[in-house]
Amino acid sequence: MSSTIVFTAAARSPMADWASEARCRGIDPEALFVQGAAQHQAKKICDGCPVRVQCLADALDNRTEFGVWGGMTERERRALLRRNPDVASWRELLTSDDPDAKIA
Image (cartoon, rainbow, N blue to C red; front, side, top):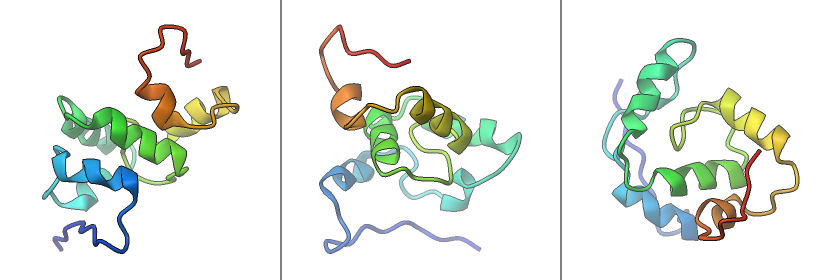
């Protein structure tokens, strides 16, 4: 079964604007919601994506539980969140030009 993710104006958040530029735009979303070794293939879809950082920040800020987002699996994102519990905005941190901005 093939399906497509559609962002409507009502559901669109300020961060959702990046989705129209995503490399995964138009592919079967189920390709990004896989388990085990298939996640390595799914992560390759993110390679070279122009909005990878925005995607990852959105997933981290919204505590998205499932799927590959911004090149990271749900397990990788959970670990990152556990190591960095004090980050208030992943969007600000990941898009910052501040050389002192640190991620553990």
